[in-house]
Image 1: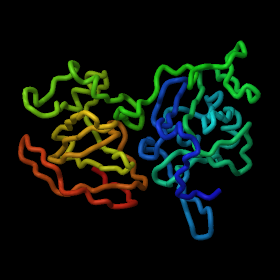
Image 2: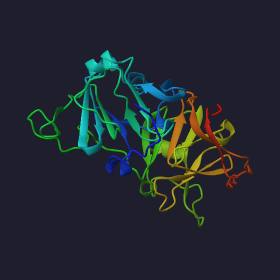
Image 3: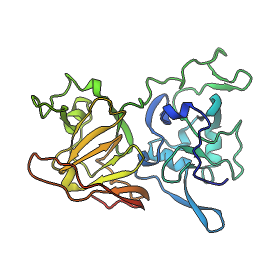
Length: 318
């Protein structure tokens, strides 16, 4: 299987839906390269002579999400045209050392499964639109004739993800703590719930990230690192001097799933905020952006010089 730079527009649903990893119906994290927990181990693979790419063992990835393959009953891999590939926990354990996934553009793009090394399933999908892992909940049964997941009575399940209590909102900013989704930040939920730090000023309300976390019952003592992910899936790693002074944000109208972040004198846009408290930030290869110098006068935030695209690199530790 060649890992190329295709657009993978197999299913229009994927254009508007963020692939998500669910555990017993609970959204655990968005299935993207830059939102994988720090402990995920990249493995280099030669798919053609002299040409290499990066992929990951599926059971290794699950472990960083707090799910042991030994405890899994089944996994459901959703793909285009409403297909669902069922991989039992037994087969996961059987193939644990040769069952991989990758991303369509290597260091970003959509997740996809590598169907090789003798891995056999009821079907195959290329691009993964959602992944449901069943540990404690009973996995529904896939019926090929009805082309649907069935409940115990044999009726098709209407929900997109069985047992699900919610999904990722593409217009919300995802906040991850140590590689797990902890909150989705939406503009219409800020007014009246948080006090702006610039109240009374004729500008977009600006809030402390710390206040938002506390309001969502997410206690954090301190951070080991803060990464911002841009809309085009590049990573901006804030230095310690940037985030220790406090991180603030605003959510202007029509921002389309982004917030404006104020930190260390920089003004930045982000669609994902990755916070690291117990774990160090990941050191795997990423498409990064390095910030230039900025004004650091007390209370002053000015746009930094245009961020420099560093291409593929490993972000420096904060």
